[in-house]
Length: 291
Image 1 (tube, rainbow, N blue to C red):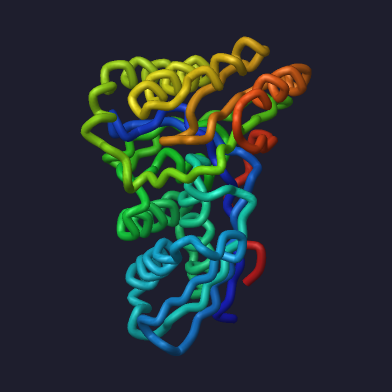
Image 2 (cartoon, rainbow, N blue to C red):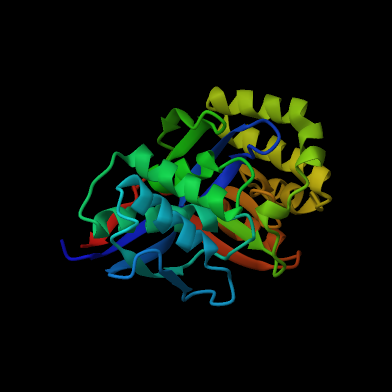
C-alpha cells in the first residue's frame, strides 16, 4: 500500500431535482473533479485544499474521508492530506459537491489499499455530503450520474438506483452559469415541496425514458418555486435546444443541444447574464488514476 491515490469523477446535470419528491434523475457530463489523498500518521487530522476554488469550505473533504476511514475501521490509524481540483464551478447547481465527494471517496478507498463496489463508494460520498450539510436529499441521483455516467433515475430516500441508460451520441450540453452562488443547504425545502405534484409528473416522464421532456418541465417548475427567470430556458428551447431548464437549485441553466444547434442556442444564451460552459455527455465511470 502506497498510502496515496488520485481519482477522478465527472460532473452531472439535473433531469429531475429530488428535493420536492425524494426521487430524482440526472445525467453525466464530461466536466470533472480530481482528488488526491495522502494518508498520514496523525489520526483524526484531515486537511483539505480546493485548489480550483480556495475560498470554498473544505468540510466536505473532511467528512467524506472520515466516512471512508470509519467504514474500514481506519480512523484510529490514519489522518489524511487531500487536494482537489475541478473544472466544475461551485455552488451553481452543477453537481460540484457530488463529483467532489465521489472522487474523494474513491481516492480514499484506494489510498487505504481497499476496494468497494461502485454504489458503496457513491453511498460513502453521499453520507459525507450529508455530514457536511451540503445536500438536502443526499443527492443520490447526482452522485450516481457523476460516478456512473449516462442517465440515471433514483430513489434518493432509499438510496436505490432504479435505472441507468446510455444516452445518444452527438449531443452537447451548454450551461449558462451566473456569477452568483446558491448553496443547496440553504434551500427552503418546505417551499420547494409545494411543487411536488408537478415534479411527480416530470419524474414519471424520466422513468419512461423521456428525459428531455422531464428536464424542461422540471426546470419550469423549480424556476417558478425558486423565483428564477424561466426565459433563459425558453429562449434556449426557441433556438432549437432539445431540452433546457434549471440545473439543481440553480442558478445555472442547462441546455441539451444537437451539434447543428450549438451556435444558435449559444447566441440565445448570450443575451442573458453569465458565463457559458460547453460540455458533452459522459458515460465513463469514476476511476482511480494512480495508486
